[in-house]
Length: 136
Image (tube, rainbow, N blue to C red; front, side):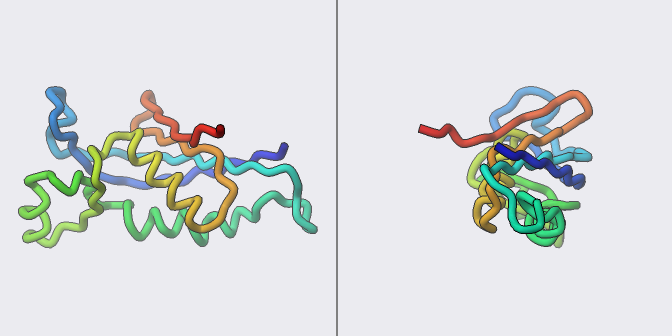
């Protein structure tokens, strides 16, 4: 089994609904996604995946949709206020936790056809969440 990983750094803001700690307030992070791909064989170039393909697809999607945006739950009452103010938003159906953002990036990586096995998201230098699908 071959594995490769790529790190994508981006900045985003969020807040958590139904949460009593500091993260209930709007705030930002310098996030880092670690995308791990795996497969049994290499292509004719000796590569599992060209890192350039990952950059053109997933990294570009993160840059276009998450970087320097507020990632909010679509039910967040701040959505209307921020939208009316012209702020860039990315809305998800769940609370925008590190776990759910890691899952979102995983799903986007699957959509572009890359053999992803897991996505980790460093929300801070000390806090890391991982999403991987359970294989049955």
